[in-house]
Length: 189
Image (cartoon, rainbow, N blue to C red; front, side, top):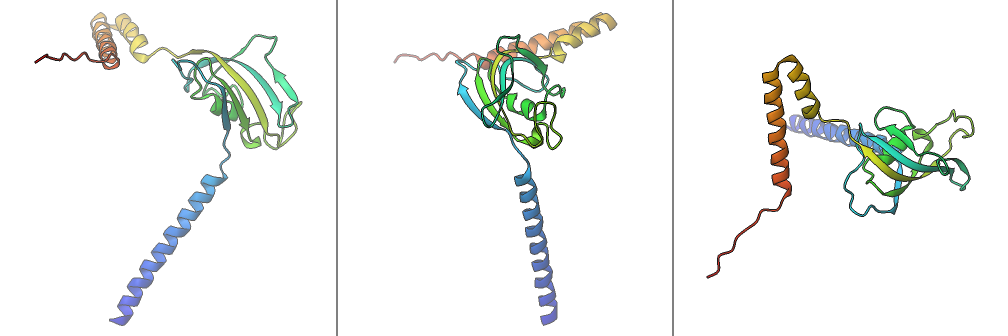
């Protein structure tokens, strides 16, 4: 009986040790993942729209090294427009722009792993941490499938297209109803 209990508790202890080891490995992997540091320089007045994956965003930017030396800027030029999620810019830049409010000014600090890494590029040495001051000027979201799909269906079958369009309009009415506060009437006694 004693050997069964010790084997059972040994098995439990072994399982606990394995779980602890797996937890520590998971924490070290999570802790090792580099992250973009964001700092809001000027908040948007209303934050009416935020940058999301798939959006085309237009920004003014100034890129500099941690010592303050500027390596690129849109000052005096046209702002840059990129589509988030299409890998048109370095990963840290995309990560730093996500969630940014229209009209917001933000500073993002990008570690080398999310910039140009160990290889660098012309004008940016290997293992450089990059700092960008950004101003979000415009956000254009891709059209909803509920907007484009009914037109496609109308071409294929007018009845299906009208059903899809009716469903889209119903959803818009429901969204509007959810946004507007409900009026409550109070009866005077």
